[in-house]
Image (cartoon, rainbow, N blue to C red; front, side, top):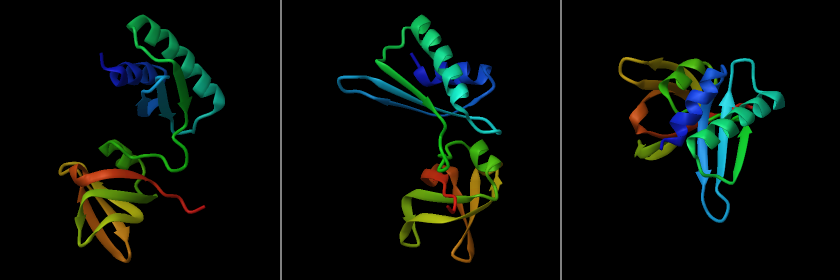
Length: 145
């Protein structure tokens, strides 16, 4: 059973985006679901999705003890190419799987995305650098606060 696929379908049918789903084991199995929409997420949005997911997970036989639904926050993770496209122009932190030029971490302005080659461009330290999506280990928005 693909819990993420079930959650994604449920969330998207309600007009939201599934940003991430995290599961932790141990004594109490916790499911964390992060949702987003262009106008931002409210407590009511989280309650609505939580209620829908609770019902769907019961029908699908998803085993968990606790469910948390929330906004991804200001430092929203970027996982899919569409995330990078949506946030062009935003300050972004990228960690690579392997070092490039002796470093793995880059923070700067996300300047563009080449969807054909699945590469993202970042203006960092006065230079523009490009990374293949497959080479990125983690990325998230890094707003100046």
